[in-house]
Image (cartoon, rainbow, N blue to C red):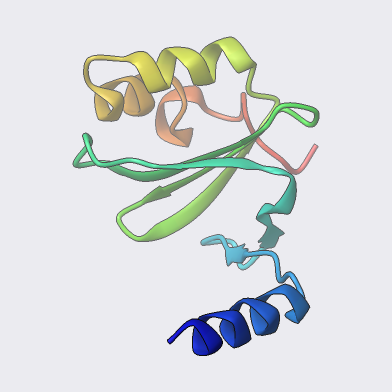
Length: 107
């Protein structure tokens, strides 16, 4: 048993580190290596929230699909994560229908 566990640990230590990549609804592939991601269990709208502080990029999973929002202030993300209803906050302040092109990444 100990020998098998030691073998497994050696194998894991030698395995290459592979970062996670997701695809948005726009077919944009995003490497999440630079993002801080949180799986969300207390929202029926949001499943995952990933944020890159340096670039101010927000990637969210809603309905099983990922979307990217650019230029989102850290304070907005903090308010999202601390909101009593994350879904309502997201839908009112961040989602493209509500924010228009405010967080558009094409610029």
